[in-house]
Image (cartoon, rainbow, N blue to C red):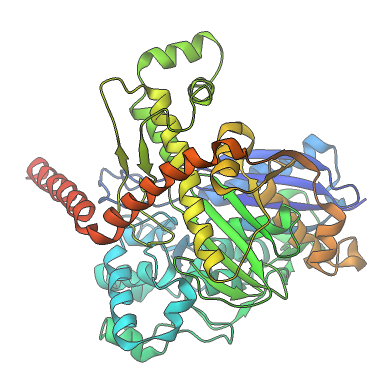
Amino acid sequence: MAYSIGVDYGSESGRVILLDLETGIEAAVSVVPYAHRVIDRLLPDTERELPADWALQHPRDYLDVLKTGIPAVLHDAGVSGDSVVGIGVDFTSCTVLPTFSDGTPLCLVDAWSERMHAWPKLWKHHSAQRFADRLNEVAAERGESFLARYGGRISAEWYFPKLLEIFEEDRGVYDAADAFVEATDWVIWQLTGRLRRNSCTAGYKAMRADDGTIPDASFFEAVYAEFTEPQQLLGSDFYPVGTRAGNLSESWARMLGLSTNVAVAVGNVDAHVSVAGAGISSPGSLVMVIGTSICHLAISPFQAFVEGMTGVVYDGVLPGYYGYEAGQAAVGDMLAWFVREAVPESYKERARSSARSVYEILEEEAAKLSPGETGLVALDWWNGNRSVLGDANLTGVIVGLALATQPPEIYRALLESIAYGTKRILENFEAQGIHFEELVACGGLSFKSPLLMQLYSDICGLPVTVRSSQEVPARGAALFGAVAAGSSHGGFDRIDEAIKALTPPIERRYLPDSSVASQYGESYNIYRTLYEYFGRDRVDLLHQLKQHRQNARNVRRSSVHA
């Protein structure tokens, strides 16, 4: 019997699964929380306070996921390491770190550990927005055709805004680095001893075209005159998803209890790998990977330029198709903020006394409300807007609050805003001829919030399918690990073969309720009006508020340290 291991790196933890390649059963699952979580307040082992919109991680947390999670799933399943034929890894992206030529992260070297820019920058590190703005400004002025591949805007979350931030703010770190690497590629580098950059992240996050080129050097020089070698830290060799990066090194095989015959696939993105994990191998489904944020993935036989998408790459998701990505920047994060910061103690006490979570209490009460009964409409921009506006400086909005407003009403409005945001993204795809027959939801909320799933269906007017696996990204990574191994070693030769053989069954399917369509239509019209007003017509309002907040914090910090 052959197994493949999938490792899914999230924002707060890593998840490891052991997938039976004969039955499709997830033989064991291990969740490993990051010891350092998201680093957004103090630089590790210092009292240095990080600026606003910074989000870092610790590379040792990535290694701990492997060292803890892989032996755990082997132990829990009672499986010998000799039965494992492949490993696949996916990661939140764009999460990037500067390294030396041997793969050592700068932040793990004493001489560099107190330099903020030496640390891995998580996808939601948004302080590079001004560099994204400059890239967008110059691209528009020059009429650069590549901009259309990204819905008209480069995001602050991506590779070059973050690299330019280092280049301008800490040239010492930039000059010392031999590579600036996606975290998913760095993990593969550690496991195999080989740097094998994947073409998926390069295409979606580093503006790499399908022909292998990036924007001309003259474009980057127009952005910053001294930035003359854009390819220097990006590299030039990239490998398609499912490619074998190499075999597990002897030291890692010994450490993990595996064989050096284990094939390691090139890295992948958590959202993109979920398409395979959810059993999708043909067009017609919009896959929603729901976590702290949402990524929306679609495949099509043709290329279209869709406003607000965050990339279209041939072979970027599945071979033979154009893969499209869009997204919403705050979902689980937004709900967690509300529960942590804004829910009265009485609800928390009620949760404790009933041995339930605050989320369950709020979900139960919010589900009792009728469409429109809250009198509220929210814009889900707690972490900026990814699609369709591509603006990390936007902030959240709730309209309609009154003295009679109750927490479950706000919670429901936030859930509705998530579904409205997805509907807005759907409209953009539909306008370009990319049509959908269903939404496929994966991630924790697809199981924990039936109300959100029904809202998706009712508001978007489409069925919502939830597969039985709660580990869809890790499952997808394991499938690509099996493809890296190949059929001669117990895996598969093509990803479509792996998908067909190992698609998990349907857990639940939600159908739209036509009786509430008109009520949601009215609320969505208000949402769209607010969306255009605050996101385009008077975008300066939210930008100014965010700037006022940052200025006030800077003044306070200066007075404290004076």
